[in-house]
Each structure stands twice: as structure tokens, then as C-alpha cells.
Image 1 (tube, rainbow, N blue to C red):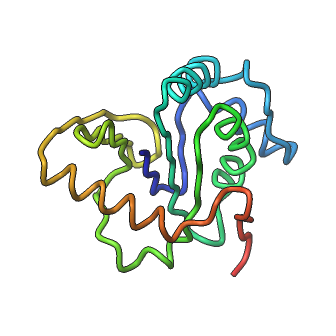
Image 2 (cartoon, one colour; image 1 turned 180 degrees about the horizontal axis):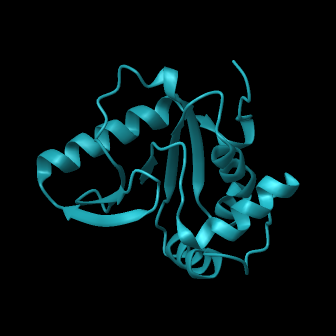
Length: 159
């Protein structure tokens, strides 16, 4: 399970593709570009072993340019076997959420993705503390229940 809660990323391996999207309004769905060659085979292999990979994204509306880009490239995640849903932030106000994006692995290990204020990678922290695992699992499941499947979510540019 992966919960994303930020509206902007400035991760270096996406920069060129994101800039091209800003110029053209079209996202590259070439799986050989950017970070995809490392990610997509990993997802396909895991899903092939029976691993269920769910990704939920909490987004502010109107959406940022980055979220529009992220939505446009999500078909690559789906084709590899991930299930992706979107939750408008206004529908998450009553959910107890951890302070950072995270992965929950095998219901026993949480990896927090720590980012700088500009959206680039800063660190990764891991814990198997049962209380933290329980918080993250509950947060993710609540978000997942409310979230909209990718195929049905249209990013709002205005309110």
C-alpha cells in the first residue's frame, strides 16, 4: 500500500518529463523513459507473485500542474498491475493521517518517504513499530474506501 499526500514533487528523475508535459500538455507514456524502467518491472514481478499493490493519492482541488501530470502518467502504473485511487483532500479532513507519504509493506513495515520543502527526496525512514503500522494501515484503508478509482477520477482545475 502506498499513500501519497503531497500536491507537488520535484524529484529529479521526473524533471525532464514533467517539464515536457508543462510545455506540451501531453505526458509521455513511454515505459522506457524517466524512472519507469526500474519501477514497472518490479511491479509486474511482484503482482505476478500475487502481491496486491494499491496506491492512494490525496489531492487538493483545484489540482496542481504536477497532479495533472501524475494523473496523465498513471496508466503506466495500472498497466503494470497497480490499483490507483484518488481522494480529494476536502474528503479527508476527518481522517487521522501520518505526517508523511508512506509505503506499508506486508502489513508489518512502514517506509516513510521524507521530502524537502521543494518536493525533492530528503530521506527514507522505516519502522516496524506495531502502533505506527496500525495507524498507517487504518489511514490507508479509510482513504481507500472513500477514494475514486483512477478510471473515474477527473482532476478538477477549478472549484
